[in-house]
Structure formats: structure tokens, C-alpha cells
Length: 334
Image (tube, rainbow, N blue to C red; front, side):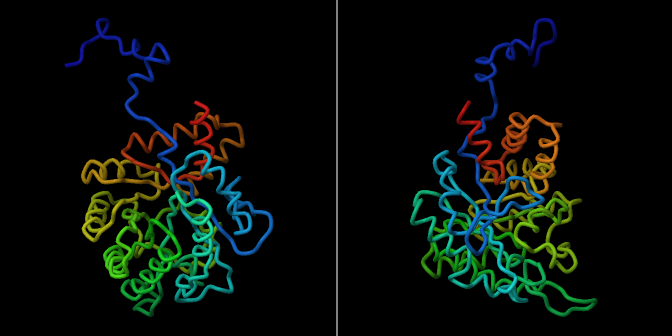
């Protein structure tokens, strides 16, 4: 039983830096960071994403130089997201299965240059469809509807395509039912037994994704919303059911997205399943922090690490964050 004041003084253990370090309950390190990177077609200088200050869309001619600092800092993995040219988009997301698409070319280039860097590939159709959805649309009562089972076939081809190009971890972010099991079976049947699946197991129909959709060029084309397949922000128990299903189907790691508004979900998932658990500090979270930082309302050096520590405290084993380089440099500097 805890003592009472004045016998017990919790401030004693906060008095000195060495004491605070000694009793710290959680640690944030470079090993906890995954850096999302946007790749684009063409050559030349990288393009800044207007709604995401300092975040760039990078052509393959500059990709090695862009990724090099992450490797030098010891960041273990990066996640690749393509800004597919509009002319290559169609209703079925056909470009996702092209072995010469942006992700595949980037993966081969990066594996050749940085063989020990982990590569995570986004598996979803929204960067490739002209309607901006994560699956294919079919007529239904009341209008068009994302067809779950028809989408699975295309997602499986996409996952195989990425794996054969050198992607180490396929990360299905589409939220179609059964996609983890379908991808796992296909990977195993083709001899890719070591390819990991990081499932976006609890992905919410969030308003925090807007800047990301700008970055990959899917926002303006989006017809309707994604509430018929992404989760309702009001639900918590449903997240546990989704995670349980994905683990049963063969997921090696699970993710909660977005991050900070869903710290309670992260904690519940970690407590319930005790598996590798990740969060995505999404584009809207990044844009909010950067807006306040640029206005001088928040201290960048402190707030970035504090926000990331919140994920570790909630139970995350790692975080996908656009602040990865920023955080790694600060951590390395002590």
C-alpha cells in the first residue's frame, strides 16, 4: 500500500536527471521508428506536400539519397507509398499488379543499395483507382458499393507483386474482410513463407487522413466516403474482434490507425493479445503538430518526442511517423 505525505514524497525520484532516467518506465529509441515515404514518377527535385510541411514526394532518381540519412541514423524500416500518375489509374487498380510500378521499382533499388533496411509495402487500391477507394466498386442497391471478395483477388496480386520485388513486410491497409488470410495463403503457396504481414487491423474511418490523400493523389478523386469498410470511431470492442480475426488469419503484427486519438485502442489491443503492436501517427496528426510548431505555439524539440512517447506508453512496439528522422536525430543527440 502506498504511503502518505510527508513520509512518502514522490518528488524525491524526480529530483535529479540520473534518478529520473533510473526509474523511467518506458524508453523511446530509434528502433521504435518507421519512416513513411512518398514516391513519385519522374526525375528532378522532390516536391513538398502542401498540407504536410517538410514531407516530400521523391522521384526514384533521388530516392537513395533521400533514404540514406535514415539508414545512417539506424531507423530499422521505411514504409513506401506511391503517388501513382493519374494516367495509370483505373477502376480496378490494375497498376497495383504491374511489376514495374513505383513501389516495385523503388523496392528493387533500395534492396540493392540498403540490403539490411526493412521495406514495408502498403497493400490497398486507393493509390491506383480512379475513384479513390481501397477496393473495386460494383453496382448495388442505392448506388456503388466496394465489393469485398472481388477486391481480395486484386489485393493478393498486389501483395505478391510487391514481395517479388523485395518488400519484406506487406501491410494491407484496405480493411476488406478476409484479406489477411487470402494474402497469407498466396504468399505461402508461392514460397514466400518469410514475408511478414503487418495488418492495419483497426483502421478507423477518420477525418485525420486528408493530407495523406493529398500526398498520394487519391483525395480529389474519392467518390463518397469509406465508412462501409473502415471502422466507426465510436467503436472500441469491434477493434478487438478485428485484431483477433487478423491474427487468426496469419498476421504477424497489427496496427491501429490513426494513432493519438486512439491510444485507448492501442492499450486494449496490447493488453488483450500481447503481440507486436504498431500505430500510425497519421498525416493529420503530423499537420496539426507542424502547424503549431511553425506558429511558435509548441516547442518542436520537446513535443515530437513527447507525442511519440505517448505511443510507447500506450503499448506500441513501434510507430509509423513522418517525424522519424527528426526524432532519430534528437534521440541520437541525447
